[in-house]
Image 1: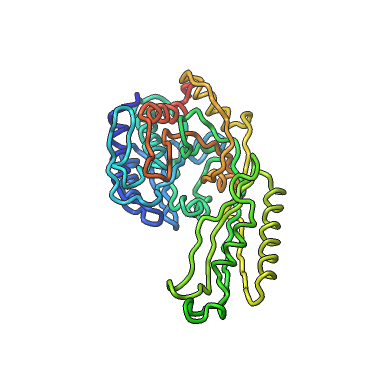
Image 2: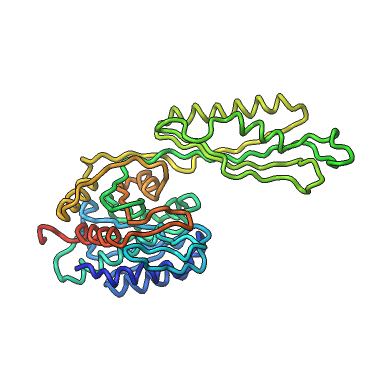
Length: 368
């Protein structure tokens, strides 16, 4: 049986451990001690991802094994998080994120498997996969040792909202970095000798279809940096941006539009130089409600008395990388809302439901 007080206590303990991307060592130690205490065999791959296994034998088929996954890192500002229980919600003090993304998912998994295993009833063979550096480009999943992963079906606790909100599609993500080079000059003495990289960058940005382009595609410039001094015509400006789309042809189309805009702006400013590097950060994927892992999740929700709702996501998760490695994944809500902001909060009733879902998934309904 899910222990709600223990679940909330575990979540608050997790978020109080600093684990910005690349600095997950303390939370790794906490998780190792906790899951070993539940009877799991814990291993660490060469990248620092944690893989914990229980009930798996040499004769266990891959199709029998359930993978439960969440990532260990949080975004900034995420140091010195102080969780505050406010009625049925958990919030931060307001100067940091809460870290519900993804520690609500981690807490739900821990409580769910603790309850399922501790009940003494039969349970499925299970692997827990806790990854590093998800927030900086799914780096942990990309570097995961898939030779250590024995199953082919994963449930990733990394969605917003209630656990009956399931992600059925995630976009392909293209990131780009642009370097605009103009010509520096003293801004007060001889500005006419300069060629402002800021002006060039502004022209470039204003000519792009930024924001939500359609129901499948978005484009954004997230970072603009440049200049050296208030009294100097800026010589160099850096831009960092992205294009996301559920449609690969549309992604290519807007990638081409970006390149055409760069060419147009370069030709408009003689002497200017614009360089771009772009690459696919992760590939999109779709999952059908009829696929075995989705059937398992829907059945577990039904036993809980919950309907389900499939939604398409504009974000990426470790599920994108799992799909590229032959693991079909359903991403489920983990009770967090307002992720990546200081207004982030976790609904305790939904957190309990997430733990219950985990317990239902791990338990063997047939008692085998």
